[in-house]
Image 1 (cartoon, rainbow, N blue to C red):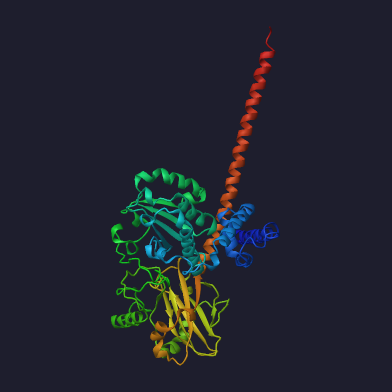
Image 2 (cartoon, rainbow, N blue to C red; image 1 turned 90 degrees about the horizontal axis):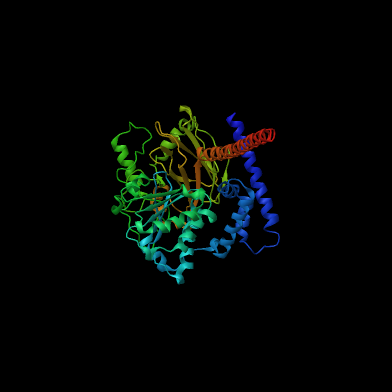
Length: 498
């Protein structure tokens, strides 16, 4: 029964998506070809997920969704968002450190920090500041499509001179209109009591769909939402991070693994020597020196088996692994599955298979990373693939671990020229980032959860409609009863003898 409802929900959603596209084309594009950036229009026509985000944020009301898309696309054209680069934004804005991405909350959502005390209201720089925020949001949207953000307004040591209502309203519109479904929550830390009136106005701008995402906390309470490993010391955290520019913080969305990082062996009974050996391999793969705690939501490499062992164990490892049904055709490697890794719920369904096929005439180096190295074993996680050859990679859940919606996998590949497999670590340090192919996969449960939430939202909407109709009927019945009583009273009074 649940499967039938899910299928019906998916069919209804697809109809809504097609209806939105057709209406947008006929009502908004007919006489206004220069109104939007053609790249945004093309994305709307080809990307179902984008249309679904807008529809979900507007409770599947197509007309409201169209208004939102129109406003969002006009803003993107006005701010030239598709072409926003680091060079477009004034350098001094990056140097202030007032806005940046760094760390994750306890649910695995990226943190978008606003240091309010560093913001000074100035009409001359307002446009640049707005473009600066758009730069960060668009950059994140391209790197992590569909993954929500948690906004942190750090109001420590701030005052009235730091509050710019127009700028705050713009930030709210970014999540309310321009980037739908990107807001996980908005945490306001250490808000001075004198600003209560200002935030009452700001709450009225948010609308009912976003007010529930507001979280007011003190420095001592913020750890309810963010772990100490991503909080600065003055908030009771242990994060040694200090903003500096250049380079951009979290430029590759990767933080080094800690010395006491997650166990990377496939078997819990492996020797301590093997664990130390694995750790040395991991450390040689990273060039950064920062030490962090092990519980991180960052792509981190697993240990690498020797090529001979991989070949010997290949047949045993692939046994029981779920084979992919879809393929992403990349410039260097074809990756199967295209987007989703599927794990079953049974004990025999703890593995799945990633197949990498070299489509170039050169040797291609590859790495596979996961956001949850403590839960998954990736074998092999790093190696090279000969021209025209394929490599089977086994991804398995470790022990009694369970996959979660935040778990993601990243496949990285780069073409090699006259480089042996023994020099892989140095190769990855030297290869230019522009030459690296990146492809992300997510756990299927994430997609299933979104579909279930969509169906639940629809059922809730229908239930609310039924309750509203019920209330109307009750009111009508009460009115009819009152009219009947009034008629009986009038009838009784007219029949009395004068």
